[in-house]
Length: 381
Image 1 (cartoon, rainbow, N blue to C red):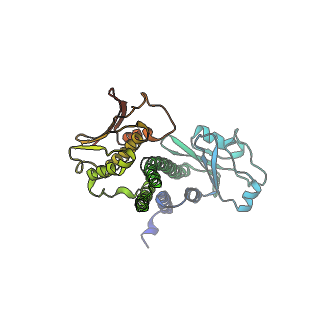
Image 2: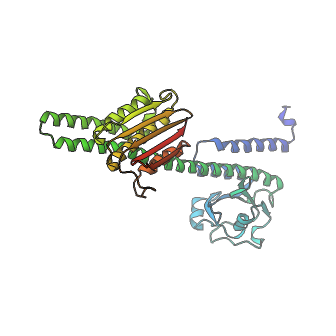
């Protein structure tokens, strides 16, 4: 006699049910669509409790009705004849409002029974359990017509509750992933908008000025040189666009941040009408992260370009200090910014503030008593 034959049949059956339940729950980790996973849970529930029919209703996020209704046991023809899916009335609505397990010998005799539509197969015994995770209810699992017995047992209820909880985890996980994706898309949209404005658009503006200057030149060689320079700048701009969209700019700045600031001051000198005086304090190339360095250059480009457009200044000073914080200060001797700055649809000052806030820093722009404007952008090292 084999070992297994000496074990009571009920224990063998219980062990098989437990293994099947565990296998079903482990499907949460499978890389499948939520609807496929939920249908699998309903199918397993029907098998485990010997139910002829099963369904799972998923509540909408407002918990006012059923957003999805998956069925098992009905043929496609049956479902077509029955018509629209339930929306959460009758006994199904009771489970939504009370969210507690419900076992019935005869579904039709319950005072909240709403009846069934034409062509619906007869259903008598009923087991309904909430699909929940902790105190959050996501829907209900419904099982009807117990095969081989007049009603569902407490054991059936426990098995159904275990599968319903697995379904709740799957729904919660799916909704959390959706929210994360939405947040990521929104964050990327904001980042791309900032980068396009602070770096790309300013480069295009500078290229436009160079081409305007070239149009006034009479020496063809000088015109060709200016146009060649503009083409080179546009090539750099295309790389900036790729960086903004695909974040390809994660590699280290060639020559470090110090060199990047000096090159930017030289690049913007024709547009400003003077080269900005640049001063450094502290370990600029050793203590500043790549992410912060990229932001520093974007902020500096925006600050100097704004000054060149609006300040009517003749002198520009840039100071980059690194200690406990990375602090960029840009000063000009122009007409001075209005205090407080006039609200406009432009992204300039808003972008600089958002860049600081993203790095837990601060951004201040002020009009100087002696005339001109001072912009201070500072983030923690």
